[in-house]
Length: 347
Image (cartoon, rainbow, N blue to C red; front, side, top):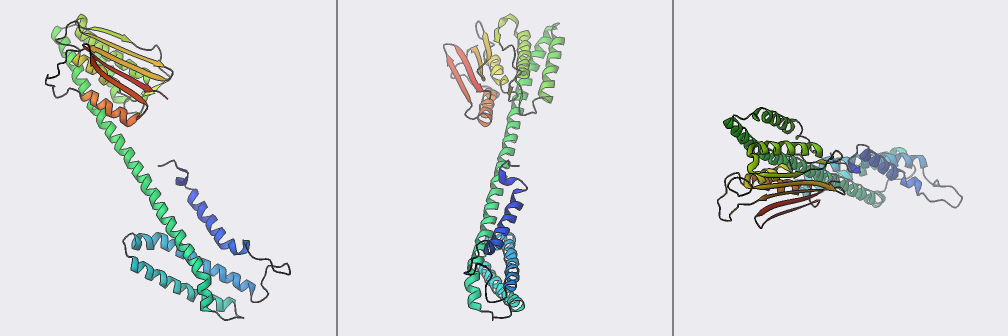
């Protein structure tokens, strides 16, 4: 639901009440003062004209809502313009008969003049039609805009959910490879590694459904993932990390940083001499700075596997959807180092 002021439930009824009070009461609010200081006409039945005024306004009231809720959606929107104008002419004739009847009942000292009725009622008749049409068209435009925003929001949530689901299987594939390697070595580290994996799964299943998570939880998740990779590679890969001591006051989109780390271990290990991965995360003046560097053995013409680049492509899309102009992402591959640097406003 939109948070615009005009979407609140009390606004429309209040506007309608004020409109009709002003419309019906305007002849009394702006009545002329006569020479003797009175405002009642000298000739004719004043009370009869008041009754006639309210009777005619009852018909205008009906015209307003019939036009807004019946004629415009069923005739104008379906382009039955001729039938629409025929109905309006018929309603004007009905209003004239209505006026003649109540004029003869309440105002008995003068005869009913059709020309006077036409002259005095066409302006009010046209005003009611214009007001009613504007009310309907503007209301439909507001409803259409709100529906469009709701659809965009729903589509955004669906797309983000899809992108997040792509990240998770990729991560699980890497971690399970770690478990297989430890099992083959019959390492004593297998049990604590499985415990860490269960903690990671608990985080992925129960905390990442939220729009935002605490940054300190995301950092703990990264640390656990890096520990699992340390157990896998041992001394064959030099891993250096820097994390803030406390990040409890900040929130972040879940699973946003892990693809950069995954990518570093995917492409910064293997057949690389003196493999090294540096991961630095800091917060300076409400700005998150995240840097991941790994020695690169990437060759330009080297064919990529099916999963290459999935994580980075997804995280770029998620950054565009969620943070728009509130982030800066730089990816370079110079002097044998592949570097990803992300700056994210944490407001």
